[in-house]
Amino acid sequence: MTHSDSSETDASAAESIADATARDPDGNPTLRDPPKLDAPPLVGNTLQFARDPFGFYDRLAARDEAVRYEVARQEFCTVFEPAYVQRILVEDDEKFVKAEMFQEAAAGFAEQGLLLTEGEVWRDQRVRIQPAFTPEKIRSYTDAMVRYAEQSGDRLADGEVVNVEDAMSELTLKILAKSLFDVDVAGRREVVREAAAALNARGDAGGASAFLPDWVPTPKNRRFERAMADFEAMVDDLIAERRAGGADGDDSPDDLLSILLTAEGPDGTTMDDAVVRDQMVTFLFAGHETTALALTYAWHLLGRNPDALERLRAELDAELGDRRATMADLPALDYTERVVEEALRLFPPAYVLFREPTEDVQLGPYRVREGTAMTIPIFEIHRDERFYDAPDEFRPERWTEAFEADLPEYAYLPFGGGPRHCIGMRFAMTELQLVLATLVREVVFDPTYDGDPGPLDGGDDAP
Image 1 (cartoon, rainbow, N blue to C red):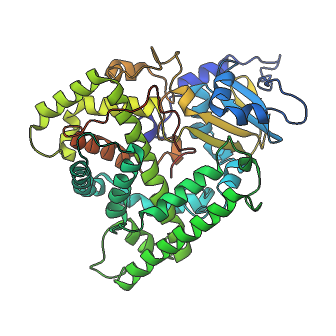
Image 2 (cartoon, rainbow, N blue to C red):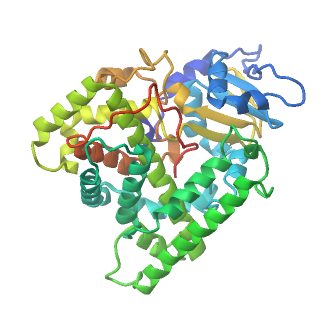
Protein backbone atom coordinates (compact mmCIF):
# COMPACT_ATOMS: atom_id res chain seq x y z
CA MET A 1 0.00 0.00 0.00
CA THR A 2 1.73 3.14 -1.20
CA HIS A 3 -0.55 6.12 -1.46
CA SER A 4 2.37 8.31 -2.42
CA ASP A 5 3.35 6.68 -5.71
CA SER A 6 0.70 8.53 -7.67
CA SER A 7 -0.18 12.17 -8.25
CA GLU A 8 -3.88 11.36 -8.51
CA THR A 9 -5.89 13.28 -5.96
CA ASP A 10 -8.60 12.43 -3.50
CA ALA A 11 -10.26 15.83 -3.76
CA SER A 12 -13.20 15.16 -1.48
CA ALA A 13 -11.27 15.60 1.76
CA ALA A 14 -9.65 18.83 0.65
CA GLU A 15 -12.96 20.18 -0.68
CA SER A 16 -14.77 19.43 2.58
CA ILE A 17 -12.20 21.45 4.49
CA ALA A 18 -12.38 24.27 1.97
CA ASP A 19 -16.18 24.30 2.23
CA ALA A 20 -15.89 24.88 5.97
CA THR A 21 -14.02 28.11 5.41
CA ALA A 22 -15.88 31.22 6.55
CA ARG A 23 -17.06 33.49 3.72
CA ASP A 24 -17.95 37.15 3.38
CA PRO A 25 -21.38 38.36 2.10
CA ASP A 26 -20.14 38.05 -1.49
CA GLY A 27 -19.20 34.40 -0.99
CA ASN A 28 -15.43 34.96 -0.96
CA PRO A 29 -13.43 33.04 1.65
CA THR A 30 -12.33 35.05 4.68
CA LEU A 31 -8.97 33.58 5.52
CA ARG A 32 -6.95 33.92 8.69
CA ASP A 33 -3.37 33.17 9.60
CA PRO A 34 -2.76 29.83 11.34
CA PRO A 35 -2.40 30.13 15.13
CA LYS A 36 1.09 31.05 16.29
CA LEU A 37 3.01 29.39 19.08
CA ASP A 38 3.92 31.68 21.95
CA ALA A 39 7.59 32.61 22.01
CA PRO A 40 10.03 34.86 23.87
CA PRO A 41 10.96 38.09 22.09
CA LEU A 42 14.03 38.22 19.85
CA VAL A 43 14.91 34.49 19.92
CA GLY A 44 11.43 33.27 18.99
CA ASN A 45 11.05 29.50 19.27
CA THR A 46 14.65 28.77 18.27
CA LEU A 47 15.84 27.50 21.65
CA GLN A 48 12.68 25.46 22.22
CA PHE A 49 13.18 23.77 18.87
CA ALA A 50 16.93 23.19 19.22
CA ARG A 51 16.60 21.62 22.69
CA ASP A 52 14.18 18.92 21.54
CA PRO A 53 13.10 19.06 17.86
CA PHE A 54 10.86 15.98 18.05
CA GLY A 55 9.25 17.09 21.30
CA PHE A 56 8.69 20.49 19.71
CA TYR A 57 6.70 18.88 16.89
CA ASP A 58 4.64 17.01 19.51
CA ARG A 59 3.77 20.36 21.04
CA LEU A 60 2.75 21.76 17.67
CA ALA A 61 0.59 18.72 16.89
CA ALA A 62 -1.33 19.21 20.11
CA ARG A 63 -2.09 22.82 19.17
CA ASP A 64 -3.87 22.71 15.78
CA GLU A 65 -3.86 21.25 12.27
CA ALA A 66 -1.57 24.09 11.13
CA VAL A 67 0.67 26.10 13.47
CA ARG A 68 3.06 29.00 12.92
CA TYR A 69 6.25 29.65 14.86
CA GLU A 70 9.62 31.37 14.43
CA VAL A 71 13.04 29.72 14.33
CA ALA A 72 16.25 31.61 13.53
CA ARG A 73 14.12 34.65 12.57
CA GLN A 74 12.35 32.62 9.88
CA GLU A 75 8.56 32.27 9.83
CA PHE A 76 7.57 28.59 9.82
CA CYS A 77 4.27 26.80 9.44
CA THR A 78 3.83 23.10 10.16
CA VAL A 79 0.77 21.20 8.92
CA PHE A 80 -0.72 17.98 10.29
CA GLU A 81 -3.88 17.66 8.19
CA PRO A 82 -3.58 15.15 5.27
CA ALA A 83 -5.81 17.30 3.06
CA TYR A 84 -3.37 20.20 3.50
CA VAL A 85 -0.47 17.89 2.68
CA GLN A 86 -2.28 16.81 -0.46
CA ARG A 87 -2.81 20.40 -1.52
CA ILE A 88 0.87 21.24 -0.98
CA LEU A 89 2.32 18.18 -2.69
CA VAL A 90 -0.26 17.51 -5.40
CA GLU A 91 -3.02 19.99 -6.14
CA ASP A 92 -0.95 23.19 -5.82
CA ASP A 93 2.51 21.68 -6.15
CA GLU A 94 3.58 24.26 -8.75
CA LYS A 95 3.08 26.99 -6.13
CA PHE A 96 5.66 25.37 -3.84
CA VAL A 97 9.41 24.85 -4.04
CA LYS A 98 11.87 23.25 -1.66
CA ALA A 99 12.15 25.64 1.28
CA GLU A 100 15.05 28.07 1.10
CA MET A 101 16.24 27.02 4.55
CA PHE A 102 16.47 23.41 3.32
CA GLN A 103 18.39 24.54 0.25
CA GLU A 104 20.79 26.44 2.52
CA ALA A 105 21.21 23.43 4.82
CA ALA A 106 22.11 21.29 1.79
CA ALA A 107 24.49 23.86 0.28
CA GLY A 108 27.50 22.12 -1.20
CA PHE A 109 25.68 18.79 -1.58
CA ALA A 110 24.88 17.76 -5.16
CA GLU A 111 23.20 21.07 -5.93
CA GLN A 112 22.57 20.07 -9.56
CA GLY A 113 21.12 16.69 -8.58
CA LEU A 114 17.50 15.55 -8.66
CA LEU A 115 16.92 16.24 -4.96
CA LEU A 116 17.59 19.98 -5.11
CA THR A 117 16.76 21.15 -8.63
CA GLU A 118 13.44 22.82 -9.43
CA GLY A 119 11.11 23.57 -12.35
CA GLU A 120 12.01 22.57 -15.88
CA VAL A 121 15.53 21.49 -14.90
CA TRP A 122 14.08 19.01 -12.39
CA ARG A 123 11.42 17.78 -14.86
CA ASP A 124 14.04 17.18 -17.57
CA GLN A 125 16.23 15.24 -15.14
CA ARG A 126 13.32 13.18 -13.87
CA VAL A 127 12.30 12.17 -17.41
CA ARG A 128 15.87 11.16 -18.28
CA ILE A 129 16.37 9.12 -15.10
CA GLN A 130 12.96 7.40 -14.96
CA PRO A 131 13.92 4.54 -17.37
CA ALA A 132 16.28 3.21 -14.67
CA PHE A 133 13.30 2.53 -12.38
CA THR A 134 10.78 0.76 -14.60
CA PRO A 135 9.36 -2.55 -13.28
CA GLU A 136 11.45 -4.43 -15.84
CA LYS A 137 14.65 -2.72 -14.72
CA ILE A 138 13.87 -3.28 -11.05
CA ARG A 139 13.36 -6.98 -11.79
CA SER A 140 16.88 -7.08 -13.22
CA TYR A 141 18.27 -5.68 -9.96
CA THR A 142 16.71 -8.30 -7.68
CA ASP A 143 19.47 -10.92 -8.09
CA ALA A 144 21.97 -8.50 -6.57
CA MET A 145 19.54 -7.70 -3.75
CA VAL A 146 19.19 -11.34 -2.73
CA ARG A 147 22.80 -12.35 -3.38
CA TYR A 148 24.29 -9.55 -1.29
CA ALA A 149 21.75 -10.18 1.47
CA GLU A 150 22.79 -13.84 1.58
CA GLN A 151 26.46 -12.85 1.78
CA SER A 152 25.67 -10.43 4.58
CA GLY A 153 23.92 -13.17 6.56
CA ASP A 154 26.81 -15.59 6.01
CA ARG A 155 29.23 -13.15 7.65
CA LEU A 156 27.21 -12.90 10.88
CA ALA A 157 28.06 -15.28 13.71
CA ASP A 158 25.87 -16.48 16.59
CA GLY A 159 26.15 -14.20 19.58
CA GLU A 160 28.05 -11.52 17.68
CA VAL A 161 27.33 -7.94 18.73
CA VAL A 162 26.92 -5.82 15.61
CA ASN A 163 25.95 -2.28 14.77
CA VAL A 164 22.86 -3.08 12.72
CA GLU A 165 22.68 0.34 11.09
CA ASP A 166 26.28 -0.02 9.93
CA ALA A 167 25.69 -3.56 8.63
CA MET A 168 22.56 -2.52 6.73
CA SER A 169 24.31 0.54 5.32
CA GLU A 170 27.10 -1.64 3.96
CA LEU A 171 24.56 -4.02 2.43
CA THR A 172 22.33 -1.40 0.82
CA LEU A 173 25.29 0.52 -0.59
CA LYS A 174 26.58 -2.64 -2.27
CA ILE A 175 23.13 -3.35 -3.71
CA LEU A 176 22.67 0.19 -4.97
CA ALA A 177 26.14 0.57 -6.46
CA LYS A 178 25.92 -2.74 -8.31
CA SER A 179 22.31 -2.33 -9.45
CA LEU A 180 22.30 1.27 -10.60
CA PHE A 181 25.94 1.91 -11.48
CA ASP A 182 27.45 -1.56 -12.04
CA VAL A 183 30.37 -0.65 -9.81
CA ASP A 184 32.00 -2.31 -6.82
CA VAL A 185 32.30 0.08 -3.88
CA ALA A 186 34.65 -2.19 -1.93
CA GLY A 187 37.31 0.07 -0.46
CA ARG A 188 35.23 3.16 -1.21
CA ARG A 189 32.40 2.71 1.26
CA GLU A 190 33.99 4.81 4.00
CA VAL A 191 34.12 7.79 1.65
CA VAL A 192 30.34 7.59 1.17
CA ARG A 193 29.69 6.95 4.87
CA GLU A 194 31.84 9.89 5.98
CA ALA A 195 30.06 12.25 3.57
CA ALA A 196 26.69 11.04 4.87
CA ALA A 197 27.76 11.43 8.50
CA ALA A 198 29.19 14.89 7.86
CA LEU A 199 26.03 16.08 6.11
CA ASN A 200 23.79 14.74 8.87
CA ALA A 201 26.01 16.27 11.56
CA ARG A 202 25.96 19.67 9.89
CA GLY A 203 22.17 19.59 9.59
CA ASP A 204 21.53 18.37 13.14
CA ALA A 205 18.76 20.66 14.38
CA GLY A 206 20.01 20.25 17.94
CA GLY A 207 23.31 21.95 17.13
CA ALA A 208 24.06 25.62 16.66
CA SER A 209 25.76 25.05 13.28
CA ALA A 210 22.40 24.11 11.77
CA PHE A 211 21.42 27.77 12.00
CA LEU A 212 24.69 29.19 10.59
CA PRO A 213 25.53 29.80 6.91
CA ASP A 214 27.56 27.07 5.23
CA TRP A 215 30.47 29.48 4.67
CA VAL A 216 31.09 29.95 8.40
CA PRO A 217 34.21 27.83 9.14
CA THR A 218 32.71 25.77 11.97
CA PRO A 219 34.24 22.32 12.66
CA LYS A 220 31.13 20.68 11.19
CA ASN A 221 31.27 22.80 8.04
CA ARG A 222 34.98 22.08 7.56
CA ARG A 223 34.39 18.37 8.06
CA PHE A 224 31.57 18.47 5.52
CA GLU A 225 33.71 20.27 2.93
CA ARG A 226 36.51 17.72 3.27
CA ALA A 227 34.13 14.77 3.12
CA MET A 228 32.28 16.09 0.08
CA ALA A 229 35.54 16.80 -1.75
CA ASP A 230 36.55 13.16 -1.23
CA PHE A 231 33.09 11.91 -2.22
CA GLU A 232 33.00 13.97 -5.41
CA ALA A 233 36.53 12.91 -6.35
CA MET A 234 35.54 9.26 -5.93
CA VAL A 235 32.48 9.72 -8.16
CA ASP A 236 34.55 11.58 -10.75
CA ASP A 237 36.85 8.55 -10.86
CA LEU A 238 33.89 6.22 -11.40
CA ILE A 239 32.64 8.37 -14.27
CA ALA A 240 36.12 8.48 -15.82
CA GLU A 241 36.40 4.68 -15.53
CA ARG A 242 33.08 4.25 -17.31
CA ARG A 243 34.09 6.70 -20.02
CA ALA A 244 37.36 4.86 -20.49
CA GLY A 245 35.48 1.58 -20.72
CA GLY A 246 33.32 2.84 -23.56
CA ALA A 247 30.17 4.15 -21.91
CA ASP A 248 28.84 5.26 -25.26
CA GLY A 249 29.36 1.95 -27.03
CA ASP A 250 26.89 -0.82 -27.81
CA ASP A 251 28.42 -3.06 -25.12
CA SER A 252 28.18 -0.52 -22.30
CA PRO A 253 26.09 -1.50 -19.24
CA ASP A 254 22.41 -0.63 -19.37
CA ASP A 255 22.29 0.96 -15.93
CA LEU A 256 21.59 4.37 -14.40
CA LEU A 257 25.14 5.60 -14.93
CA SER A 258 24.94 4.84 -18.65
CA ILE A 259 21.54 6.52 -18.81
CA LEU A 260 23.00 9.60 -17.12
CA LEU A 261 25.87 9.72 -19.57
CA THR A 262 23.88 9.13 -22.76
CA ALA A 263 20.23 10.22 -22.29
CA GLU A 264 19.40 13.28 -24.36
CA GLY A 265 17.17 16.12 -23.26
CA PRO A 266 14.65 18.04 -25.38
CA ASP A 267 17.49 20.05 -26.93
CA GLY A 268 19.39 16.92 -27.94
CA THR A 269 22.21 17.42 -25.45
CA THR A 270 23.45 15.06 -22.75
CA MET A 271 24.28 15.95 -19.16
CA ASP A 272 27.78 17.27 -18.58
CA ASP A 273 29.97 15.36 -16.16
CA ALA A 274 29.41 17.81 -13.30
CA VAL A 275 25.65 17.18 -13.43
CA VAL A 276 26.18 13.42 -13.80
CA ARG A 277 28.41 13.55 -10.72
CA ASP A 278 25.72 15.34 -8.70
CA GLN A 279 23.14 12.75 -9.75
CA MET A 280 25.41 9.90 -8.68
CA VAL A 281 26.21 11.61 -5.37
CA THR A 282 22.48 12.07 -4.76
CA PHE A 283 21.60 8.43 -5.42
CA LEU A 284 24.62 6.92 -3.69
CA PHE A 285 23.79 8.89 -0.57
CA ALA A 286 20.00 9.08 -0.44
CA GLY A 287 19.39 5.79 -2.19
CA HIS A 288 21.24 3.66 0.33
CA GLU A 289 20.93 5.66 3.58
CA THR A 290 17.14 5.71 3.68
CA THR A 291 16.82 2.00 2.90
CA ALA A 292 19.46 1.13 5.48
CA LEU A 293 17.54 3.10 8.10
CA ALA A 294 14.28 1.40 7.19
CA LEU A 295 15.90 -2.02 7.56
CA THR A 296 17.51 -1.03 10.86
CA TYR A 297 14.18 -0.02 12.31
CA ALA A 298 12.48 -3.13 10.92
CA TRP A 299 15.02 -5.37 12.68
CA HIS A 300 14.51 -3.41 15.89
CA LEU A 301 10.74 -3.82 15.70
CA LEU A 302 10.94 -7.52 14.90
CA GLY A 303 13.41 -8.05 17.74
CA ARG A 304 10.98 -6.39 20.15
CA ASN A 305 7.93 -8.23 18.79
CA PRO A 306 8.64 -11.99 18.68
CA ASP A 307 5.07 -12.87 17.67
CA ALA A 308 5.40 -10.78 14.51
CA LEU A 309 8.80 -12.32 13.81
CA GLU A 310 7.35 -15.82 14.17
CA ARG A 311 4.43 -14.99 11.86
CA LEU A 312 6.81 -13.53 9.27
CA ARG A 313 9.01 -16.61 9.31
CA ALA A 314 5.98 -18.88 9.06
CA GLU A 315 4.82 -17.08 5.91
CA LEU A 316 8.26 -17.35 4.34
CA ASP A 317 8.55 -21.05 5.18
CA ALA A 318 5.10 -21.72 3.71
CA GLU A 319 5.64 -19.74 0.51
CA LEU A 320 9.33 -20.27 -0.17
CA GLY A 321 10.47 -23.41 1.60
CA ASP A 322 14.24 -23.63 1.12
CA ARG A 323 14.49 -21.65 -2.10
CA ARG A 324 15.56 -18.05 -2.62
CA ALA A 325 12.99 -15.29 -2.73
CA THR A 326 12.38 -13.64 -6.10
CA MET A 327 10.38 -10.66 -7.26
CA ALA A 328 7.71 -13.07 -8.53
CA ASP A 329 7.16 -14.20 -4.92
CA LEU A 330 6.37 -10.76 -3.54
CA PRO A 331 2.61 -10.73 -4.31
CA ALA A 332 2.22 -13.86 -2.14
CA LEU A 333 4.32 -12.45 0.72
CA ASP A 334 1.49 -10.40 2.18
CA TYR A 335 2.69 -10.28 5.78
CA THR A 336 6.22 -9.42 4.68
CA GLU A 337 4.86 -6.35 2.92
CA ARG A 338 2.81 -5.44 5.99
CA VAL A 339 5.92 -5.59 8.18
CA VAL A 340 7.68 -3.20 5.82
CA GLU A 341 4.70 -0.83 5.68
CA GLU A 342 4.35 -0.76 9.45
CA ALA A 343 8.08 -0.16 9.97
CA LEU A 344 7.92 2.73 7.49
CA ARG A 345 4.89 4.11 9.34
CA LEU A 346 6.52 4.10 12.76
CA PHE A 347 9.98 5.19 11.60
CA PRO A 348 9.87 6.89 8.18
CA PRO A 349 13.54 7.47 7.25
CA ALA A 350 12.78 10.77 5.48
CA TYR A 351 10.63 12.03 8.31
CA VAL A 352 10.07 15.71 7.42
CA LEU A 353 9.34 17.41 4.08
CA PHE A 354 10.19 21.07 3.52
CA ARG A 355 8.34 23.36 1.13
CA GLU A 356 7.94 27.10 0.58
CA PRO A 357 5.04 28.83 -1.20
CA THR A 358 6.00 31.17 -4.03
CA GLU A 359 2.76 33.13 -3.46
CA ASP A 360 0.10 33.39 -0.77
CA VAL A 361 -1.83 30.10 -0.62
CA GLN A 362 -4.99 28.82 1.04
CA LEU A 363 -5.02 25.74 3.25
CA GLY A 364 -8.54 25.20 4.52
CA PRO A 365 -9.50 28.32 6.52
CA TYR A 366 -5.90 29.51 6.65
CA ARG A 367 -3.79 31.83 4.56
CA VAL A 368 -0.11 30.91 4.40
CA ARG A 369 2.01 33.77 3.19
CA GLU A 370 4.60 33.68 0.43
CA GLY A 371 8.06 32.76 1.68
CA THR A 372 6.90 30.89 4.79
CA ALA A 373 9.06 27.84 5.51
CA MET A 374 6.58 24.96 5.62
CA THR A 375 7.22 21.58 7.19
CA ILE A 376 5.28 18.34 6.83
CA PRO A 377 6.28 16.09 9.76
CA ILE A 378 5.59 12.64 8.33
CA PHE A 379 6.54 10.95 11.59
CA GLU A 380 3.77 12.87 13.43
CA ILE A 381 1.09 12.21 10.79
CA HIS A 382 1.99 8.50 10.81
CA ARG A 383 1.29 8.32 14.55
CA ASP A 384 -1.89 10.39 14.59
CA GLU A 385 -4.59 8.59 16.57
CA ARG A 386 -7.22 10.02 14.22
CA PHE A 387 -5.98 7.57 11.60
CA TYR A 388 -4.25 4.78 13.55
CA ASP A 389 -5.48 2.82 16.56
CA ALA A 390 -2.72 2.39 19.17
CA PRO A 391 -0.49 4.48 16.90
CA ASP A 392 2.74 3.84 18.82
CA GLU A 393 2.39 0.04 18.63
CA PHE A 394 3.92 -2.19 15.96
CA ARG A 395 0.91 -3.88 14.36
CA PRO A 396 1.61 -5.14 10.82
CA GLU A 397 -1.80 -6.80 10.82
CA ARG A 398 -3.49 -3.38 10.71
CA TRP A 399 -2.73 -3.14 6.97
CA THR A 400 -5.86 -4.83 5.68
CA GLU A 401 -7.65 -3.79 2.49
CA ALA A 402 -10.49 -2.33 4.57
CA PHE A 403 -8.07 -0.29 6.68
CA GLU A 404 -6.26 1.05 3.63
CA ALA A 405 -9.56 1.97 1.96
CA ASP A 406 -10.57 4.06 4.99
CA LEU A 407 -7.19 5.72 5.49
CA PRO A 408 -7.19 9.31 4.19
CA GLU A 409 -4.93 10.00 1.26
CA TYR A 410 -1.63 11.40 2.55
CA ALA A 411 -2.11 10.12 6.08
CA TYR A 412 0.62 7.66 5.01
CA LEU A 413 3.46 8.96 2.86
CA PRO A 414 6.83 7.35 3.62
CA PHE A 415 8.01 8.18 0.09
CA GLY A 416 6.58 11.68 -0.12
CA GLY A 417 3.85 12.39 -2.63
CA GLY A 418 2.79 14.15 -5.79
CA PRO A 419 5.07 14.67 -8.78
CA ARG A 420 8.15 14.75 -6.52
CA HIS A 421 7.49 11.45 -4.77
CA CYS A 422 10.64 9.36 -4.41
CA ILE A 423 11.66 8.11 -7.86
CA GLY A 424 13.21 5.02 -6.25
CA MET A 425 10.11 4.03 -4.28
CA ARG A 426 9.46 0.74 -6.09
CA PHE A 427 13.16 -0.09 -6.01
CA ALA A 428 13.23 0.51 -2.24
CA MET A 429 10.05 -1.46 -1.51
CA THR A 430 11.32 -4.41 -3.54
CA GLU A 431 14.70 -4.27 -1.82
CA LEU A 432 13.21 -4.02 1.67
CA GLN A 433 10.95 -7.02 1.15
CA LEU A 434 13.58 -9.22 -0.52
CA VAL A 435 16.29 -8.42 2.04
CA LEU A 436 13.93 -9.19 4.92
CA ALA A 437 12.70 -12.39 3.21
CA THR A 438 16.30 -13.49 2.71
CA LEU A 439 17.86 -12.62 6.06
CA VAL A 440 14.99 -13.23 8.49
CA ARG A 441 15.07 -16.99 7.85
CA GLU A 442 18.72 -17.15 8.95
CA VAL A 443 19.23 -14.24 11.31
CA VAL A 444 17.49 -12.54 14.21
CA PHE A 445 18.78 -9.32 15.72
CA ASP A 446 18.18 -9.15 19.46
CA PRO A 447 18.38 -5.49 20.60
CA THR A 448 21.00 -4.93 23.30
CA TYR A 449 19.27 -1.80 24.66
CA ASP A 450 15.93 -1.00 26.23
CA GLY A 451 13.21 1.05 24.54
CA ASP A 452 13.16 2.43 21.04
CA PRO A 453 16.37 3.44 19.24
CA GLY A 454 15.08 6.97 18.71
CA PRO A 455 15.61 8.90 15.48
CA LEU A 456 18.64 7.90 13.47
CA ASP A 457 19.75 9.92 10.49
CA GLY A 458 17.33 11.05 7.82
CA GLY A 459 15.55 14.23 6.89
CA ASP A 460 13.91 15.61 3.82
CA ASP A 461 12.47 13.60 0.95
CA ALA A 462 14.66 11.37 -1.17
CA PRO A 463 15.10 12.07 -4.91
